Length: 104
Image 1 (cartoon, rainbow, N blue to C red):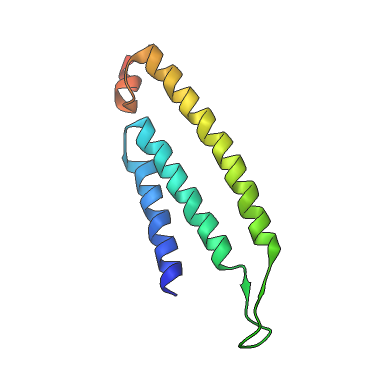
Image 2 (cartoon, helix red, strand yellow):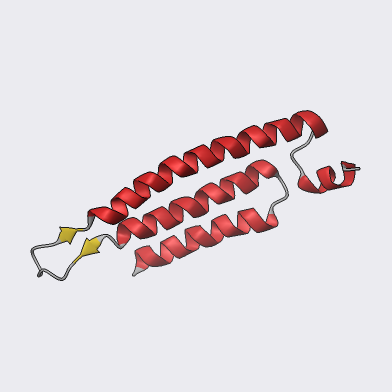
């Protein structure tokens, strides 16, 4: 049960970074933290303990979903970082409030 609470805490921390921080890099890090919390939750739910006390089976489907999620998440993070760098080249800042003020 404690592991599920840690997943929830990690997801909350990622969501907090995404919603409350104004630096684009910190927002990207919040997305990554939330994604890894969801991946950890899927891996924790992969255990099937219905076969007895000493025999446990692991469902491979959540593991495949997590592997796919890692690959897609990595591609998404790379695109977000590239987009952030282009915005930095244009506006000279990573702060989204200043970027909104500079927009014409």
